[in-house]
Length: 312
Image (cartoon, rainbow, N blue to C red):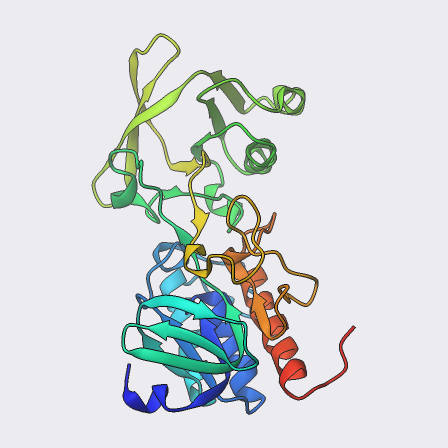
């Protein structure tokens, strides 16, 4: 990060350069707000390793997550947004001019949008990292149609897993739901038991993920701790996988017990001039278009805050 960046007060500083951050940068820079995007590692995250996205509005062709993200960042830069790479050490939102301490010094801003991603789990399954985005994902809702007529395994024990399994069953040849422990939502099983292509396997877990360039097989431990090897086409891991990377905020804004930032419908936090969206806030739907919408909402709200426009 150059000294020029540290010597300026930006209208909007965006923390996180993913879809939400890039979208906010497009809208903010287009609205003539001086805009800085800070990312600790550029183009790294769940979306950047997503192999195919075919349901993003306006794009008829399939693109990788990285291609979509790169296009948005290039667009934001064309409007004047600046992207910088650095590590954020602390934040101070107690003053009208917000201060973000990075490795090189202090970045100042009139408003801030927190658009950080989520942490990769530390207790990864053998092979999980190698095949993430290449057959392994943490959410099926990016585009379940990619699993048409395929055998997919999903693991988890929550309402979200029940819903995703039901959605997958509309497209897949077979869905195997692995429940590593007692199911928290047993009532939901009745819905799945009616579906002929859904197999529910209690007290099953995954030991290893195998393949060459793409996921090909998994090693499963059944209720008797016997090893089974299955040929599969896709694997959805939904057992306490991703957590928002918001620990650096400490008590500067209100967060829930999982670390998600609490916001209102305008993505405003409890601190005036500080907004949050994307994976940093709790959302039932994980889709690139939702994160992009968050960025647009936050940028417009920041513009309203800076220029004292009336907001409900």
